Amino acid sequence: MSRLKLPSFVVLAVAMSVLLAVEASKTPATNEEPRYTSDGRMLRPANYREWIWLSSGLGMSYNPQPEPAADPAFDNVFVNPTAYRTFTKTGTWPDKTVFVLELRASRSKGSINTGGHFQTGLMGLDIHVKGESRFRSKWAFFNFEGSADSAALIPTTADCYSCHEQHGAVDTTFVQFYPTLLPIAQQKKTVGKQ
Image 1 (tube, rainbow, N blue to C red):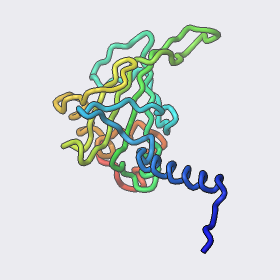
Image 2: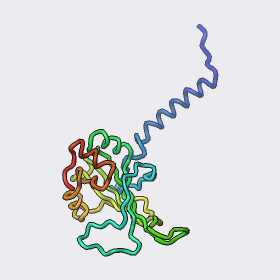
Image 3: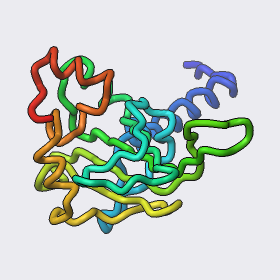
Image 4: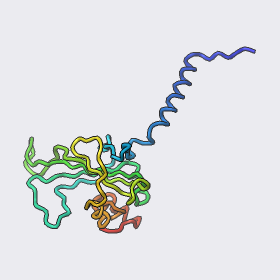
């Protein structure tokens, strides 16, 4: 009986395929899912600026009489693409939805600008994340200071939890401020409060 001798490049190709398959099984399904340290801190989403942009606000405040700022802050809201696609089909947010509220300073004078405001430096990130089995209230908040790689859970006694619970248009999220998503929620009849 003769043995079949495979060319070395075939053996090498098969070995590489097996190695790649093993490595792929070790990595998360997507790079947009929330990740946490062993002590429960959330890791900063590295590529959130490649996610779906929902809206920007300028000088927004939920206080009854906010003090006007000469150069109010901008907030930019991004959501992970998988959650966005699910919302456009169902009007609801799936588990592992991650909202990133990026806070940026503004300026009114610079370069050739003579009116209005433009965005400048990063002031911080606030994260609103859905974790149905991780968090008792299903949704949680994290605040990333400066360029921190991780952030601790904001205690559930903080105002952000009750405010989102009372005023979130869909679940505990402020869809009322996302002009491309509010009509979807209205059409799917998932709007609760505004």
